[in-house]
Image (cartoon, rainbow, N blue to C red):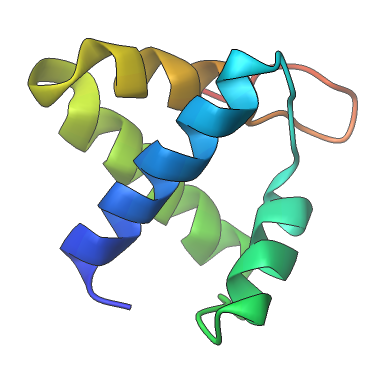
Length: 81
C-alpha cells in the first residue's frame, strides 16, 4: 500500500470507528491491514505511519485528523495521539 493510499485508508476507517465511538489498538489495526495484505511487521513502524497520517490530515481535513487522534488507543485504552 502506497503512502497516500495508507493515509486515505486510515482516514476512511477511523471516521467509521469515530462515528460509533469505537477505539482500537494498533494491534487490531494491523490485523485489519493483514486482511488487506498490507500488514506492518513492526508495531513501531505502524505507529509512525498512523502518526504521519494524523499529521497529514491535520490541515487538509480536521475531522479526519481528530478521528485518528480519538480512535487509536494503547493497551490501557488511553489515546495515543
